Length: 178
Image 1: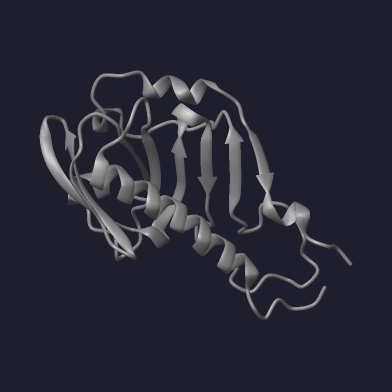
Image 2 (image 1 turned 90 degrees about the horizontal axis):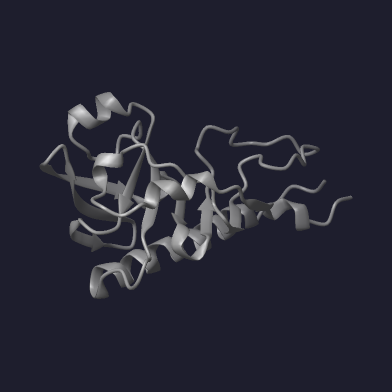
């Protein structure tokens, strides 16, 4: 297979992160309409992530937050977002760069995105065409998402969304194979 000098995989991932950015921007400006709520999983072990040390200790690799009824100060920039959530009754500010997001879901409309976790090889073998090798994944039917932080949400039954199974489409399934 020819080397992808243009890195279409990165272009697609950047575009899909733009979906997350836009959804968060809409929520920051207008709030979350209806039953919309977001599950966002991000890498806590990345140096650019800023969260309280006790949360980083509790979730040393990844953490899932839920934006639903109680969140404050949601601010979105081109590269990151900041939000304040309640953990054990205490308000804590989180700074999360978009590049550290592993998955994003809005179970109310059965929409989910999964991104490269940053753990794969940067230079994939030319013949490697396996599904799920650092490719963004789009799920449009019943995302299987479970929050790592049930304390981050208040009332509501968002945790039941994890009981569903989903259809996942790997974007490289549509690539022309040689």
